[in-house]
Amino acid sequence: MWTLRLVAVGIVLAALNLRPAITSLGPLLEEARVGLHMSGTAAGLLTSVPALCFAVLGIAAPRLSRRFGPAAVVCAGMAAVAAGLAARSLAGGEAGFLAASALALMGIAVSNVLMPVIVKRYFPDRVGSMTGLYSMALALGTSAAAAATVPMTSALGGGWRTGLAVWALPAALAVLPWLVLVLVRNRSASAVGGAAATAESAPAPRITRSPTAWALGGFFGLQATGAYITMGWMPQIFRDAGVPASTAGVLLAVTMAMGVPLAFVIPRVAGRLRHQGPIVVLLGLCGLAGYLGLLLAPAAGAWAWALLLGVSNCAFPLALTMIGMRSRTGAGVVRLSAFAQSAGYLISVPGPLLVGMLYQHSGGWTLPLSLMAALLVPQMAMGVLAGRDRTIEDERGMRD
Image 1 (cartoon, rainbow, N blue to C red):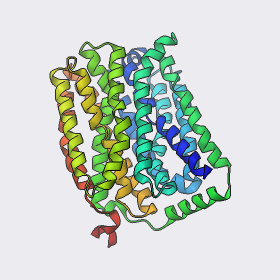
Image 2: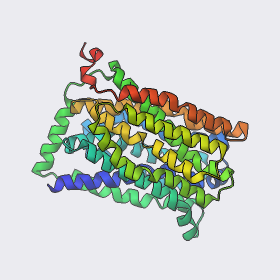
Image 3: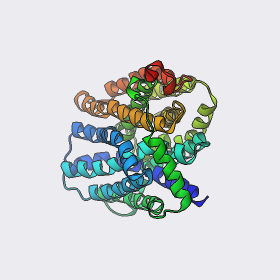
Image 4: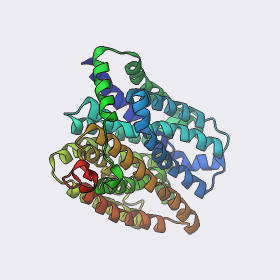
């Protein structure tokens, strides 16, 4: 059916644009800080804005989806991404830059929450493979922005503003398939949309009474903390160790690119396991090794640490997969996705800001890296709890 093919194209294009707003900034963060006269603490706040937007807007995503339909919300989200990325390249100060970034991140936030819902609705028998495809595209967009921003900026002969503005173009392209889905109302699309609306309006469990939901929210939040610290600060860690800016961007790209093959493989493997805990622990141990390497020999072993942290960051597609597996119903997935991502991103807000403050006041990376490594311990604990073979509908507190 052509509608499903169009949805698949829309999912891939949307996923490609869910991280460039963040990873395109990392390699140019130093230039942007100087150009906008930002302090280290303000830059840390900037790296915390994504998580804050995702937490706040994630709560609203299910209601917006019920009111306008998921395709319309994602379409508006992609338009907001394109507008925000274009606007922030023109900002004259910190406030304007933060506001424009927030607009783009709001669009990303609602799309983040609705992607697992759309996959569950349109591809109920292929949740693992479609989540893998979506996660792979997300990782590809993430790594491409990290690797290409500095070379593209140089090739275009512009400053950091030009390098950031370029990423508004693919975001604008991502609007098109969702716009077609919204405008074209054939019988098949109406049937699928009606089923989705019915499922979303069905009685849903009290998500806050589910221990699994809380564990999944904690796991999501802690992995998001590590991911956004990495995306926001990893290039700076390497630059402070004497690595050139262009190479630091490529190293971040390598970290993000690890998610391209692994984001496709991990959800498929996780879907075949009764308990996803072993995968959680393996990813956490890779992260601990990567942070230890950054602490002891950041430049000498740069490529190895980038690879290890790339493996560790694949906790994100694993979390998305577990969201789809921990509920039996469409209504449950909507609620669980919104709760886990909103609570998770709220948990992750202080992390990048705290790293920026520690970096500024300690003058080095020993304390920030120690914090990042320490957070992997509760991340693994929460992930093991969330990975148990159960659904939220089966838990006692949800049935009372």
